[in-house]
Length: 355
Image (cartoon, rainbow, N blue to C red; front, side, top):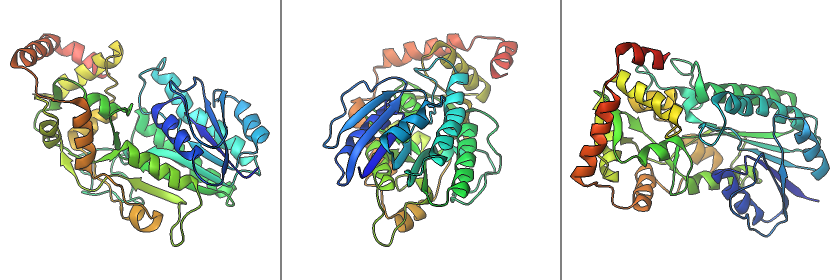
């Protein structure tokens, strides 16, 4: 058998979309999807497909790789949200311990020749002293100290160690900006779906987006043999051209904003996480305070791909999928009244929530 592609995280939206696309690529003889739960919709395509219900934190993943003679591993089971999961601890275990277990299995598999890992631009952090634009080799002013950003930093560290131990394996790390799309299951997608957008008073961060179609296409190119004059090995920032302010994004979506003190937004974020309404993580709060912009020169010139959607166009697609965003004044008033009632808490409560 020729090219056998193993996809982790196939039960999620991005994983299932990628698995369907890669099945139709010439030279792909088999696609193996691995996740705890199967995808919610059928995965079509020309090449044979098999689903293995397995937890990548368990050694069973090594047997899956060996039994199917896997040649390409695409690791998408690195989550940035706890929604749909039991706890933040379980997600961290999957992100970090699961990656370690997967890399250990790949290291022992002589058949594997290519490894692609989904990462995030949140590894750069979001801080007031950040540079205007982050390049791949730049280090953050303040290293992420927790949450999904710290998970991604640890995952990338383990991947670099793996590449030193297996120099014969082509390793590509894709640092995606905020992925948007009609069906994307990302924290920022969920934030923009709110009827009213809470913002941090006094801040209007710069943001970048990548359309989910571009995310899938970048993964497809990373999993296949590179075109002449390009390489898919290395670390690449992936984002649509252009930058938008949060206030501009809210206007394009037709969503009113409610500026609040940072402590108040932090309290609401903790309340949303506990109730399961929205996974408003601390790193997302920092993003919506200080913003983040990355350079994509390496993606275009070395990797050989220019995203089809700009940052503005990616947001426009989301706006079209959501429909008219302007809400009736009565609904806006009712929502803001609920926000005000929620904020009627003591400073001790806010401090306890932040802790």
